[in-house]
Length: 336
Image 1 (tube, rainbow, N blue to C red):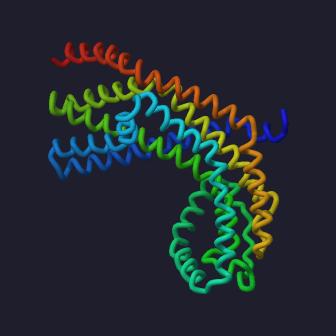
Image 2: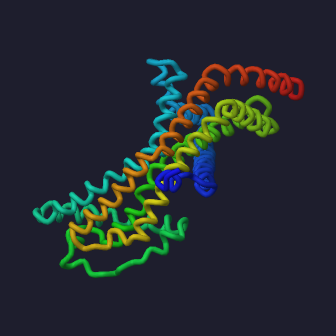
Image 3: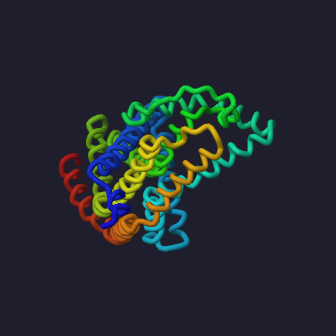
């Protein structure tokens, strides 16, 4: 097996990173949604709150529902999940094609004072957000926190045309390959967290309306059971596929970001130097996108998602009906 193939192979750290990022996103969305629903409950009657919760949950799945009006629900689910794994894995490399555009933008500023002034003003406006992002990444990534800062003056260099410095660009270049995998994990984690909060809070409301205070816990447990049962049949395949895709993207991001550190990329002060470093970055991107390992993994994930979509469309509902029928009988015997 060639070196270009083996170095892009994922390992345990990549998988753990995906799982932790997804789980953290889910928990944040769950807690935030529960707090928001609880706060809304103190200001409104149960009916409006229930409508708001239902609307939130519907919005989370709207894209699939709308698409399913034109094609089979199975293919709608498969298409959107395939786009997610493509973005998390292949998209991590494609996203770095933005580097030539960024360098070209800097080069254009030398010939236009007005464009330079507008660009610098806008970039300085965003700098507090950039600093916050750098602090967050530093707290999570020791390698990023250890990046050497040059502290050189920008006068007389290409960086005088920017609202940021050389160190800021290097840090941005370090973070760029992580953006797409992180976004895919965060979005999917948020969606699941919002849906879980919907089931928990809606169950509590329904339980209270039917059985009083004693029914709150019962309603929550009932709806959580429904949520878990509705996810497990296809989720045991679908979720690992998404985590696997993000792990592949993370492996590339790790390699790319550490090349910036280890090879001293983006330390120059001229356009020519930046272009040479961008060429090195694009070279790694090409190597990644041309690697057999990437496309073998993507093919595996597509097959997994196709199976998951079939199960979700034709099997999950039947399992839900059977399990919930047993659970309904149990609740009726105990509380009615």
